[in-house]
Image 1 (cartoon, protein in one colour):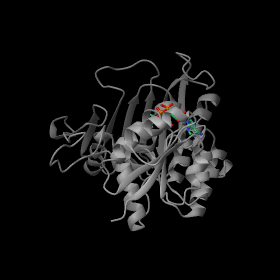
Image 2 (cartoon, rainbow, N blue to C red):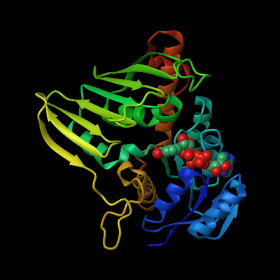
Image 3 (tube, rainbow, N blue to C red):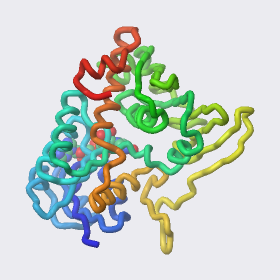
Image 4 (cartoon, rainbow, N blue to C red):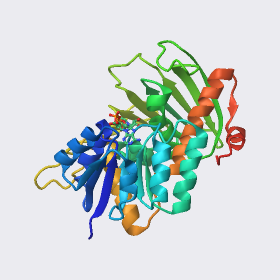
Length: 336
Ligand SMILES: NC(=O)c1ccc[n+]([C@@H]2O[C@H](COP(=O)([O-])OP(=O)(O)OC[C@H]3O[C@@H](n4cnc5c(N)ncnc54)[C@H](O)[C@@H]3O)[C@@H](O)[C@H]2O)c1
């Protein structure tokens, strides 16, 4: 198996996590590093090894020896870099969020789909072992519920992605949200915290509570529940635990991620740091797509779609009215 050669764009916190994880993925080598702050790229070259460091992503796009790039710079630069990488024929991993606006996201989607490169969009939790198990245990929930700290711009993409791209399979029809500026965390937005309901075509409903700076230390940053007709699943401890209850509340099965984060000598489940969250799986999945030609499970189009869900929530917060999501997508020129 020939190594897949990757460049890293964005040598900050997530760059470090993904480059570390990449070193555990068989046949993936990071050999080039790029950051606007050249010193950060040079630090990565020293730390992880490879061939060169640069402060210009175009150097990586022009490098014919590179198969792909890992992009984690933040949403301001993501759409331009994804577009540049796709046009250069590089396979792509790009962290969430895909973009700040729907037109920027559309530009990235068009470039990736036109080029035919493989792209994995960084909604890691969808591949997290306990999240996948929850979906198998309650495949068709009637209601789901997520509670999460911080704001729509920082965390919502992960949890909304699980609602619209994994747990609920029917198309999203209606979005209704109410909230207010309580802490001034995202002062340019109509609210920094809110309660939203998403209604799907099969009648199932997702309830999402984004509670800003008010944290629940017992339940941690986020937790999820899936209510089916016969049973209910609780995803606890940042998706490390998955607990199945029957409708009377008795625990019938309980699973917990015990996998070694860093594996070790002889370990058969080497996943890298935060293994329970699916970051390792994203990179392994991208390599698999490149080698086998299979389709990505975390697509760039889904990155745009989940941004549209966020925008519809913001529209509902601003107007105080429910948003017809089908009409919203048509109005913004995207597929539902
Ligand atoms: N999936 C997750 O679990 C998770 C967790 C945290 C952050 N994130 C996302 O990852 C992304 C990066 O977050 P972070 O915490 O690593 O940020 P960071 O600020 O630590 O690192 C970003 C780096 O990118 C560099 N950069 C910015 N624009 C660039 C450009 N055009 N070319 C080259 N380098 C550029 C910056 O100089 C910086 O070093 C964000 O989009 C964030 O939302 C995801």
